Image (cartoon, rainbow, N blue to C red; front, side, top):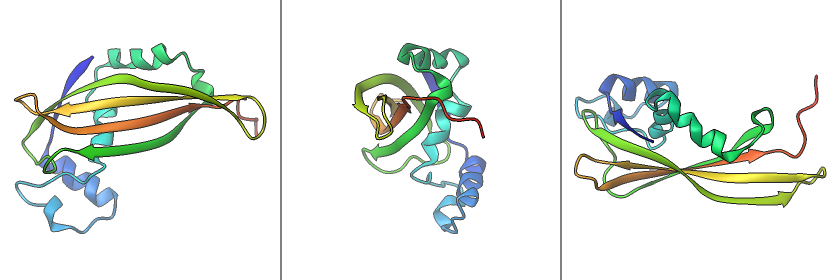
Length: 138
């Protein structure tokens, strides 16, 4: 499923302030995004049907952890006013034995962000982990 991500100046400023940044580049009319800004794309821009990729994983969501997030940019950082086209796909999957016993499952979600001409602007890679056992009640 693909979706549009409108890069808004006010949202850049809010994100930068929430991250305690004082960089002037995030507060100009042609503000650049903070490097981790695109992590908000799936939460705020993706349609509800994008959750299908989580269903495709087959993970028990009660045992899922966010393992890692990385971003790669293929040119200048996007700026306020740009519209990016995002598409998430399921990447590599693997398993390994947990230190407390049981098998942990891993999956990588890859989101590509392209500009209006179709050029790849950025790629986000998120690692999702399903633990071997559910968390204990506290």
